Length: 421
Image 1 (cartoon, rainbow, N blue to C red):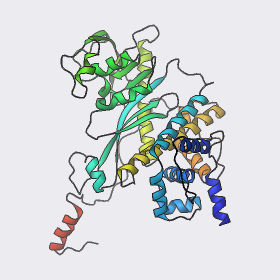
Image 2: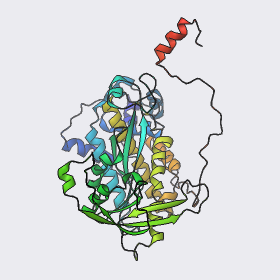
Image 3: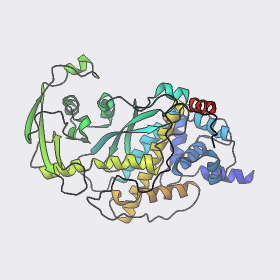
Image 4: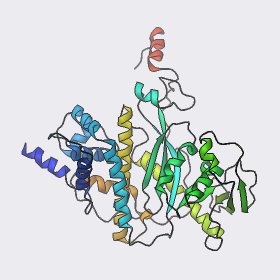
C-alpha cells in the first residue's frame, strides 16, 4: 500500500519544471464545480496516465500498467478516462498555449503573428456508434472499411503548436468549417493556407476581421496574371453560408498575385501562384511572400508528427465521447512536447524548428514515468530543400485484401470447406 501511495504521489508531480499542470487542473475542476471521490485514479493521476499512454505510441492499457508501476483494473482506468470532462482537456490545451506565449515573450519573432491552416484525416474502430457518426472512405463498404474523420487544424508558426483543431465530417469541404477557426485570429495576423481555402468569400471574411491572407491560388481562378487584381463578389451565395451573412461581404476585394519558381529538385510543384492581401510591395516584396508561403509545409510536418510519430493515425477509443477526448489529449500531449522544444531551444540557443520532435517526445515520456531525462535535446542540421521519395522499399506480404464483411467471407470459405489457418 505504501508503494502504491508513492507511485500515485509521483504521478501527481509536474513533469516539466515551471509548468504547474497540477495546480491548473485543480483550479479548473474547482471552477467548474466538478467533484471527484477519493480513489486510486483521481483526475490528475488519470490525466497523467492518459498522457503517458499517448507518449508511448498510444500503447495498450496492460503495457501502461507496467510503464507506470501502478496496479489498476483495465475497466477502472477506462471508466476514469470517461469521467474526465472534455472541458478540462480543452482548457488545458489553451493554457499550454498561453505558457508557450510567455516562453516566447523575450524571443525575437515576426512583427505579425503567422498562423497556418490545413486538414488531415484519421481512422478509428469499426463500432456501431462510430460507424453511424463518421463516414467510410471512398470505395469502402460497411464491414470492410473503417470509419474516418477529418481534422481541421490551425498552428502558430512561432511555436509550432496547434491553437485549434476541429473534428469535421470526412466529406465536408474545408471552407464549410474554416470560419470556426477565425476567432483564434486577431487584426494584423497572417493566415497561410493551401488552395482549398483560397476563395473570394474566405478572403473577404478575413479582410473584415483585419486578417491578412497568403494562400496558393485556386486552380479554377481564371485570371492568374501576376500583379494586383480586383476580385468581384460572386452573384450567387456559396452553399455553406447563409444569405444574411453573404450580404454583409464587400462587393470586391483587392488581391495581389505572386508567381515564383521552385528551384529544388524533387518538389512536386515547379511554379507556384500565391494570392495574398499583403499589398505593400515595399514591406512584402515577392521573395518575402514566397518565403512566407514556404512555411505552409510546416503544418504537414506537424500532422505527420501527430499521425505517424505519435500514432494518432488510428484512434483506439470505441465511443464518440471517447474519440473526442482522445483527440483532445493528443493535442495536449503534442503541445506539451512543443513547449518542451521551446524551452530547450531557449537553453541551447537554436531555432525551435531545429529541435528533434522525436527526441523531445522521448524526453517528456521519461519525465512522465519519473526519470530525469537528458536536458540537451538533439538539434537537427539545417537542411533546406530536403526531399524524400514517396516510395516503400520493404515489400509487404502478399495477402489478399478483404473485399467483403469478415463473417460473410468466413461463411463462403466454410461452404467451400476451405481451412482457415
